[in-house]
Length: 381
Image 1 (cartoon, rainbow, N blue to C red):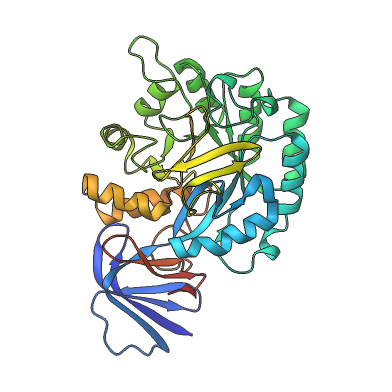
Image 2 (image 1 turned 90 degrees about the horizontal axis):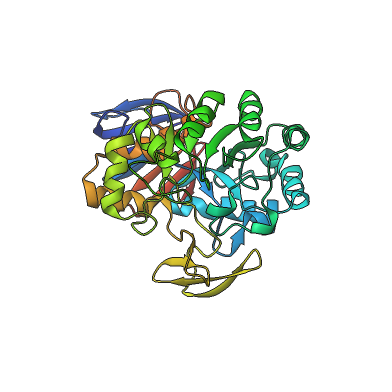
């Protein structure tokens, strides 16, 4: 079947008023002046933006569902919910937990391709912990934090059978650099975070195979002009990628601007870091045995520590566009292409180009979702 979507098409280089033509589940062409093409179905969104499907590399939960608490059942429900917010692919992300819990999630998620036949595409798992610094743990359970051990790391890789796609790790921990090298050699995206690492340790982690930094500015020591650290390394090194939570609260706009100047658009991606309380009313909830209060759109622990975000990617895109007038192709790069690239999926996902899978979201001017297509199938709208 040949079909099309009309609108303002956001390509990697510019916005083209026209039509994206698909054959089955692949993009066949982008036409700036569509005519009477022989198409079976045409969706007309002439006043809206045809955007590549969003890719979220860091999301813990949504609307009462949590990856660590609910495992595959929660992942399935999150997958079904995400297309309504423009997300077509994601890495379900665990919190730090005991190894028995993590291994159980890993074991049951290995069949995710068969388990999730519709909804947002699951690209694999992101383990945020347990190899994190206790001094920068944030909302992670201190009792479950661990130092990486060789046999344990090998067991994770072996039992995961490829389902683990990303691990956040503090590189200053004993054994961490060796773990980073082994994990990277086995095709796992290594992200540095929840860390008190200095500049030299961060540099050695990059040399061992680390590629990115988890939620830039959060979960790490602040910038100090005489004590260069992970943050200094992330901002100053041209090779390392960084993710950022652009909800205007985890990182204030004045500081987001610094990140954009240092890393965007080629080495910065947007993530939600969303929790199970996302898209729920204000109130007090339980998250992995801790109380979390949602107020004014943010989630806080009783100590006042930010527990994570309640915003999703489409809201962050709107923030960035309104605050900094970033072009739509650059926004698409940070929310779709770079995340896809980091997990090795850029040849199929992340941009509207010939030959790629038809994962597409239609936005209005305020980044409200009007329709979502995944693998050539209209999921929403």
